[in-house]
Image (cartoon, rainbow, N blue to C red; front, side):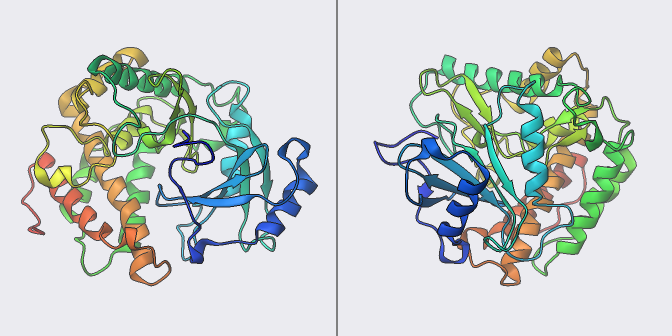
Length: 365
């Protein structure tokens, strides 16, 4: 994460009161379970990263080393979600075969230390784009960022899960069907009175789901703000972050989930409200160009008609994620005002999904 100026790290802010933890206890645990000689003496200065809407991420600034701590949010969470040990083990296993994971420091399963489990990794120094790139780039550079990032996804999908010791993440054939049923169940459990039921979209997904095209290691949250880029060459990815949702599954489902965040310059004003990445920057590939580039590099083939399923599923899954987060806000399990408008995002995504399948608008707006 690029420094704004010496002593500062982009995106790091004072810790929110409701997200604070016992820093002395964390320091004591770390020094008992990891070699902290190179960090310097004393407890770290702690800051919280404002990006992200799921797990909580903190910067631990020791005198001679920066570390990153990840922990779950407070409140009701989906079964199997926010598993810090799983996220830690995946990255530890990947390190020898996929050189784009941060070095792991330690995982604490003892919830008595700070009230939840957590893990700590070394900070990878570089830049992470949010709504916009961290510095001006030429159109040629923007295209290189885009294609280099897609090549990173292709490289991940080429990792042999069994060889990495991650074969147990897979449940065999039927990944697409499990995802449709799983996200349908999760969405329905998180419904609040101000969002739609997505019934026509769910029915369409159930009726049009394809067979799995392959079984590989997938990230499941692959987007620009989970990638660290080299400060010396801002087009070159050097690390992939946030492995909470990684598993073994269908690569086109991974790509479809990624493109749910991909707002184009030509999208309408409603869709522009959902933009969280620099995907409208001149030089950026369109969604159709992304699919074509990825498929060529990965040796896969999909027609525009076939792609509609993956696109709609990606939008539905994103809505499910946003609604689970909004549900926590709606029921007072978090007071973070960032989550207050998430219900509107869910409704915008439903209108977009209905348009893609030719269904009547839900009439939310």
